[in-house]
Length: 534
Image (cartoon, rainbow, N blue to C red):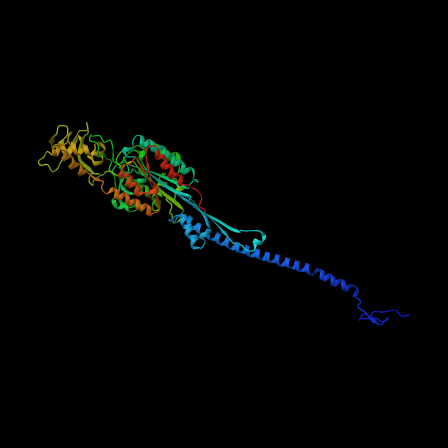
């Protein structure tokens, strides 16, 4: 019996009949294929849709990120430009214009500006609907791109000149209201600063500015006396905030132009040490003591006060400050001050306060501020005599004791001393000398004679003082100094001059009574001494 075998063609050799070896399973496979065709199609379609959604989502996200990045970069660029303290245009307008030029004005949602005297912070926000297509399939209707940016610039170094009116009209309630206002200003400015970052100079002014001997010694001045230290500045010096240390200047006389009695009581340059300039200081105790000690007296020369206040902010005055450091008047830590804005970030401020307006400025004319006078004083009792060379004859001495002319002064040539002009003006006011010596001896004590000799001894300037003030104010502002003005119960003319001197009308304050504190407080609040960030 032969055992049946299967050849490669599936033929049963025993029976001789060919057959398919897989025949029993083939039908089932075919039926399985027909059963799964629909499921594969659905599965394939699901995979296609899923891949399409993922690809579409990637496209939407790429579009989202593109818009967000463009908005963010645009806002960064625009707020940096607007936050710059050298930017004179409206910061919000700068951002809006910048964003508009980038074609993104429709996306800008807000611009916030916070600024003060030495800082500016600008923030901007933007939002854009990226209008996605594919993410809608995930049920997301909107896909907003948001961007925000903030830029800030702050200046930490501050130099301030407080130029304060101490004329006679400030006496009483006005100076009593000024003192606490100025003290609070000093505390506010110093308290918000890092040590060594801020200096304050106090420049009191009336008819003149008494520099004090250390500051006056930094200039080429021949001193005629030691009672006070004012310098008569030529009109040409008001065209800039600088002042030469080598040009010869005249030491202002120690004289009283006003008083009709003999004894001088009101000198045009105040001899009081409490009224001298205090340069570059950061000691609150010292600064406030200076404020507390101020005494009101004399005329009003706003132009002179502004000139010296500006000079103490001038980088060209560094050699002057070095000299004061050598004299122990300024702390050695302030070498290199006033700072140069081209090298250091620094805010320079003048606070100019007046309760009046420019009045007459008196100066001793050349020949009457130094040297020997024609007045002799008796050594024993102080009796005065006038020597008048043009008088004919030998009786050229007029003795005040009896109103007669003699060949010698009262007390004789050995019993009397010829006074220098500084000695004369220390003993008698110009008005008294003009009337009771010269007019009496030569004009019979007439008012016209008094006026003649008064005008011989002194010059009286008033008409050009407002022009000088505005000239030095413009020079200060051109040098980058911010000028604040305070009209403290001042007349219309004074308010106008100080308002015109200020950096803008927003930098000017009208004050009455205790509201002067509000004015100083408003200025101080803007001087925020923080770091420079951007």
